[in-house]
Image 1: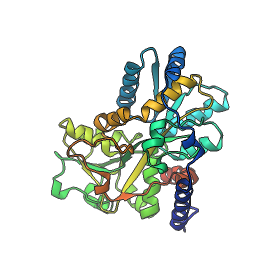
Image 2: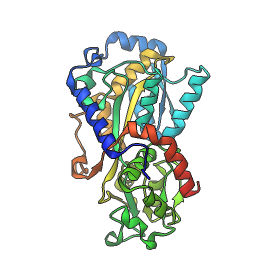
Image 3: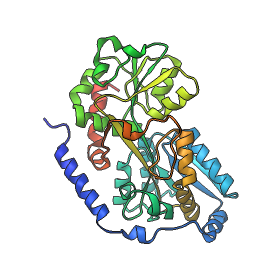
Length: 353
């Protein structure tokens, strides 16, 4: 029985075709790339506010909001933060009810933008700096979304509870009986990071792996931000998934945690952002989307959030682990979009949550 209703060969062929179409010729969006102009700033100030729906950590989203407000006085950013899958559900419900509240959205699940684009809910808007600097595969050829951030769904452990030489180094190591009742992981029905990671795990290792992992009596939490916190508190010794940037933040703050990038490969997650066509504050939304992908904001992403940027002029912090030094699994938003409901149902059945 296949893991999903399409093969890995199909995924790779589709990815290759997409790449060919992206690189074939300059897109309409590139020709219409938009700078930040005095007129845009004035119009945004006249609106005076915007609503930012996001799956970012609340401290990160609020940092972006406050920095933007300081740069453009007179415009307030209202952050609406939840898990990516909950953000997706909320927007769907609001749109069905003709409630137009969201201006800019950032999700941890790239598949959401496929749905929103298909529904014709997104406004074409490509910041000039994106068209000038970003690799074309990291923004929609029609200018409907831009990759804002990149991070990994890693493993990890509490250094007070686990010795480095005994720590798991692979997904396979998590199946060792010694970790029974000592692990924590997040849920794909809440977290876009975990939805993406679960898709990649099943694609690479199969559902059989997760069936075995479920027998390890794993603590189940919601967000990808929760497993790192459980490690730092010593409530669990090992993290079976979650995100690497929270572990980096905690380690730099002196907490007893360590990141592990599994030998088989680490799930790669991309988080795009977009402006909604029905945005109640369209000028403030465009200004925020433009600034969010500027060198200033992307450097903040790396320095404060400890995530990765696709802006080539951003400087990594000294000593930071580079993506090029890690064995990565390829993300596939189109595959996630096709398989998301199957993943939620099968996962709930396996883990009884």
